[in-house]
Image (cartoon, rainbow, N blue to C red; front, side, top):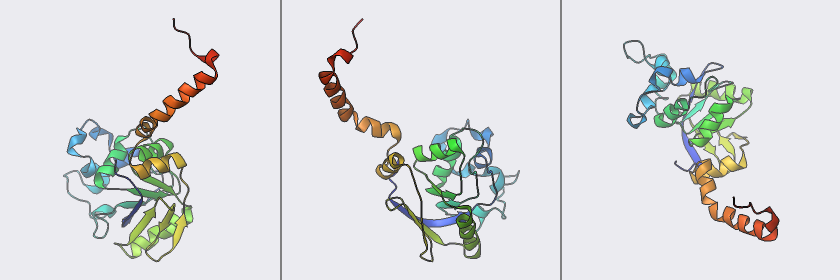
Length: 206
């Protein structure tokens, strides 16, 4: 997983409340081998028509947004099923961060586990950013995880909160399991000291 310290990139406004995981990645694609990449499948039924042609009205098909690395969405983004494939599609497309007032709980956690930073900002702030992006496509936004700030093209900065554990995972480029394995020596040392000080707590062999 690529470490996330500070990412600066073009941003795209994603309109619509309650965009669910089936809109992000339609369920019929879940059996496809991920080795081929899920990026082309992101928002498939919104980006393409039945014949596979690009829908020019969809934001990620428009100049200025095609190579977006940051999405700015509305509330409850990523609601719906628990499928992790939706996050795979975002990651494979190149999305590194999503700004929204709120996220589906499972989707939020899946983002953290896959190197995408889900940034919660007030609804009014997200709305203003989307409006600015529509007025001036190709704007870049910086998401600074180290400082826990989002910096806009006009210099405006917005602070955000993130769980310290996941912040460390993202900045090191590891998931929760990898971070735990990296602390194995500390765990073993604690276990040794614990049972040395309290031998009565040592499990009995059967």
